[in-house]
Amino acid sequence: MNSKVILTASLLATVMVMGYYGENFVAFAQYMGNVGSGGETGSYTLEEALEIQRRRVEAAEANPASGSGTPYLDASGVFGAAIISGAVFGGIAAAFLIRSRSGKYAAMGRG
Image (cartoon, rainbow, N blue to C red; front, side):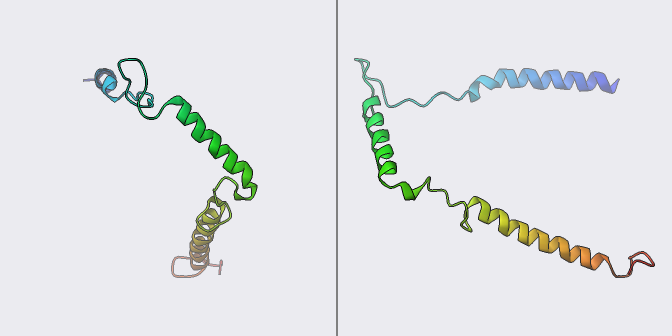
């Protein structure tokens, strides 16, 4: 058979199977607890959530030096890890570059 026909048929079959099983993998929004018979939510209500968030904002305003808590310049932070990774992989690349300048397979007249 023609390979384009086989490819198209397999693509359509894959799309149909994904559509059939796709509903099983739908992510639903998180709710705040079990809803009771009177319509009330569980132990974690909207008012409690707002109170917790208000306390978090107050704590952040009371301690402005604490920042977001993300240690960017620390070795375990974003920039620290990038610098360490760059140094390691840069050193490996430099070692390969130096080794490639000499040796049995180097081009004649280049070192």
